[in-house]
Image 1 (cartoon, rainbow, N blue to C red):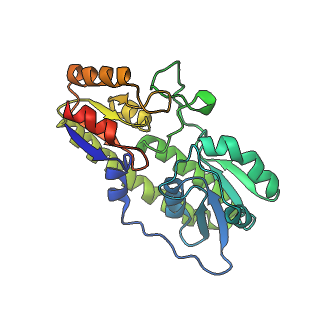
Image 2: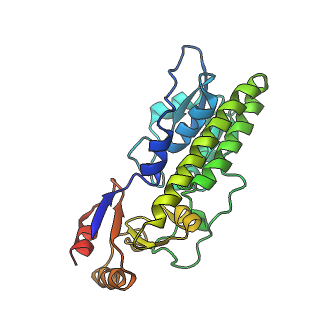
Length: 260
């Protein structure tokens, strides 16, 4: 069984969108703050050189448990707007406090209009705060919606440059469409529609492409020996041949399953 290091669905998406470089920040440039790195990428792709974009949760940190450092709270005061991603743990814990400390800041929800996956019971072996699967950015279809919300927010903040933002949004959508085509082509050749993942972050991706996601962690914790045994049996029954591991999680349990 193969074990893959997970960069989400970005293994494909980021490669297809790599042509869009990160703009350099200019002195005195207007600033927007977002929650996570993928969101920063999408915002920069549309905002171009009109806004500098910073993210609260650094690359490699968990957006469900991260706490901002004082330097970030100070920097937030320099931002004109805050772009939320929806229901991630960081936002549920910190958004109200962040906004209260920067009363001037305008808040936009970039997940508005997305058809959320609502968690019922132990559907993933893990439950998120708010009862909603928060990893909405892990789906090309959702990114189109996120991008549209970003476009609307930028036009609200800077109506004068609406044509500029619209052109860049259309360009982003074209790259997303190409990526979607690549994914669908590759999945036609896949031996199995079932994959295993440590933390269930690809629920929207699985939904959009008709895949079955099996989660290793149990209620957000290391799996018990009994659960690990069940997973091994499930792998055999479902003919799972691919396990994803996010860099921030221990890979030993996945290796145990793969060896079996």
